[in-house]
Each structure stands twice: as structure tokens, then as C-alpha cells.
Length: 328
Length: 262
Image 1 (cartoon, rainbow over the protein chains, first blue to last red):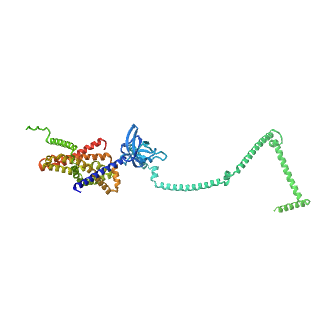
Image 2 (image 1 turned 90 degrees about the vertical axis):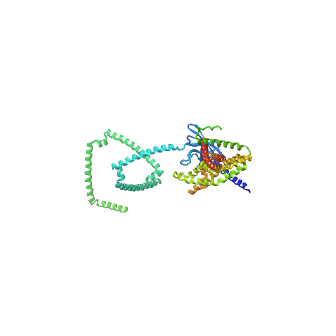
Image 3 (image 1 turned 120 degrees about the vertical axis):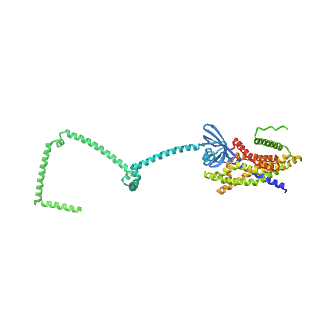
């Protein structure tokens, strides 16, 4: 191999290496832009694309799956974005997958994030459009934060005033915060509350067991609630009470009638009730009878002691004693 | 003999315009000569070997160091912003888009431009070019066209290989400072790149090569004043071609921006 051929071979290797490097670089760049391999088009309409540009990435569940190809303004509130996505994603993206504009990192390029849809929705097809979600605008977020900061500043200033006035006034709140005896009192109160709650717990336990026993039909209340015969008895009783009250009502009517008759007539009962002379005569008669019976008792005692009737009365007492012994 | 008409322009400016005009004529002659046979393929290949292959070690070492140093220098700034993960992307775009082509072209302007200027200058002052004309060989076609074609074709190849070596140097620098795999590094680099970065950089390197060859050949072909002129030709070839590289780079940026590739 002469020198010239050797030089040519080296030159050939050198040039080929350079061309291969260039082709590899262009291939990788093209591959990242989805220029090679099968792809399909997908559309979404946004209200605001926040600086999205053709060539920005499209991500599905955080994986780069395509690029933005075209951005068109439809009207003042709609921007139509055309995306080129890898063909294999047709098996995963669903009609209800949601596209949103995001940022790659804190300061990175804008990109389209596609969140997976639900399994019940059909799979996406070529040239389909998926719904979009309005992304959080950084400026809007900062404006809200600024407002929040202002509010926090006002609240902190108010709190400062309140704490200062509490410290100066030495009022109830100050005592609550600073008085140590109050804390001890609070502690004992809490202990009391704890014991009360324990008692309450016991009571509720007993009540619970009581309710259970009532439910199971134990005791009077339980029987009232559970006994099936009792209601029918009660019904009978109530009916009887009703009947009795009816009869009492009739009786009262009869009584009223009788009293009216007694009041209206000049008979014996009326005289007994209203004639004072008769009453006095009756009293006198009763006194006379009392005196008569006293005298009769004396005669009877005299009779018992007389020898004619003494044996009779003794026999009578003996029979009484015998009857009492038999009973024992 | 008629008295030479006095120019209204200062001498320096006049000389500049004269040289610019002559260079344009020289370029025009190159395009005329390249279109018509005979074609000096063997000389083109020989020059390509001398210009391209033999410049590879110098370009490779320079590119490797540039990639390594650029990464090490950029890293602290990015770390202070908490954007260390962006280092491969930033270094990749910097090298491919700007540093790789320009540094390679400047190195070649120094090595090749001076070599062509000196070689052609010495041929001129030793009347070898005149001898070629007498012997019936077209010296312009044989000496100038072959060299300009070689530089125009070889500089892009050197740029591409230099870019690759430079990126490898950058990868080593990133690897030394943190656990980054080769795959991740190159994925991040190519994720950040697009055709608007790679293609203009390759295209402008053809113009860099053309400028280096053209200026080197022009300066050597128009060498004067004996051996002193040879050194001057070599020197001015490096200076003018380096300046021209930056001017072409500026124009390339403007054109790329005009077409929306940045």
C-alpha cells in the first residue's frame, strides 16, 4: 500500500466519521421532534397558551410523547393547538383526557401536559380533539399572593394592637394568659369535669343496661312494653272503667233526682234532714233508749248473779272455752 | 506616462477597498475556474488530507479542553441558581451553536490559513507559479481551487468531529462533579437542541472554510517583496481570515434570526 492510498484511507475514515456524527446528531434531534417513526395528530383548544410555541413538548403522564406542531388563533377566546403524538399512545389516550399548559421546571419551556382520562371513555383517534383545562397563570397567582400578603400584614398589625392592649389592660384575657393560680384552678376544674364525665359514663352505662332490660321485657315497664296480653287486659279494664263510670253517672242522676224529691217532699227523710224539732225529739228518744238499755244491763247483771240463772250462764261460758280450744 | 490621479480617499481606506475588490475578483475567478474542467481531484484529496486530517489532533485537543473548561466554568453559576440539571443542555447548545464552529474555524485559520499563505507566498516569490504557467498547467486551478475546495469541505467535517469531542469533554466534566450517566447527558443535550441550532452551525462552517481557503490563497498568491512578503502573507492571512470568520458568524446569526431558527 503506497503512501497516497494510505492518506486516502485516513481521509476517508476522517470524513466518514464526521458525516456519521452529523447524521447521528440530526437523527437524535429529529427523533426528539418526532420526525421519524409513526405519529398521529391531536388537537386541543385553549383560552390562553401562555407562550406555548411550535416545537414545545407534549407530555402524557410526565413522559415526552410528542411535540406541538401548529398554534392558531380561532377567535379572541380560543387558541387551537395542533400536536403530533407518537402512534403507540393511541392505546392510552382517551377522549376525556385533559390537556393543560405547563412549564418544564420553574424556568423551563412551556409544554402541553395530557392527563389520562377514565377507562369508560373511548380511545382517541387520528385528528380527535381533547378537552383542555385552564392552567394557573403565574402572574395571576402572584397578584393573588400580593393581595394575601397585604391582608396578612393588616391582620398582623391588628394582632399586634390586640396583644399590646391586652398587656396594658391587665383584664380577664391577660389574667387567663398570665395568672398561674388560674391555671391551677383550671386544672382542678378539668379534674372535676373528668370525674363528672366518669360518673356520667357510669350513669349512661347503667341507663344502657336498664334500657336493655326494658327491651328484654324485664320489670313493670318492660312488661308494659313487651307483654302482649296486657294490652287486651288493659282494654277490658278500660271498658269496665267506662261502664262503671257510666253507671256512676246514671247513679248520680238517680241520686240527684232522689235528692230533689227528698227536698221537694215533706216525708220522713226530709223531716230527718231539715226538721230540727224532730231531730231534738229523736235525740231525746235516743237518750231515753240509752237510759233504758243501761237499766236493762243492770237487770241482766242482777239476773246472772241470781241463783236461779247462775248455772245457765256458767254452762254457756264453758261451751265458749271448749269452742276456743278446738279452734287452736 | 500620464500622472496618476490623486485619490480623495485616505491611503489606508483606499488600500482596503483595493484589497476587497481584488479578493472579490479572486473569488469570482475561483467560481469560474471550478465550473470548468479539468478538475484536480487528486490535488483536492491530497490537500484535504493535509488540511483536514492533519488538523484533527489540534482541533480535537482544543475542542476537548473547551468543552471541559466551559462546563467547569459554567457549573458554579448554574449551581447558585439551583439549575445544575440544565448544565448539559446549556453546554450542548453553546458548543453546537457557536463555540464549536467558531473555535474550530479560528484554529484552522491559524494553522491552515497561515500554512496556505506561506506556501503560496513562497511559491510566488520563488516563481514556481510562473513556471507552472509556462509549463501549461493552470496554476490557479491546481493550487488555489484545490485548496479552497479542500478547506470548504474539511472545515465542516472538523467542526462536527470537534463538536462531538467537545461534548464528550463536557460530559467528563459533568461526570466528575456528579453522577450523570452518558445516556442521560446526551439525552439532555439533544432534548435542548433543534435543527435551528445544528444546521446553521454546519452551514456557516462551509463559509468559514471557504473564507480561510480564499484569504490564505489570495494572500499567498499576491505575495510581494521576497521572503519578507511570505511572512507577511502568512500573518495577514490569519488576521484577515479570523476577522472574516467573525463577520460571517455575525451575518449567520442575523440570517438565522431572520428565518426564525433561533
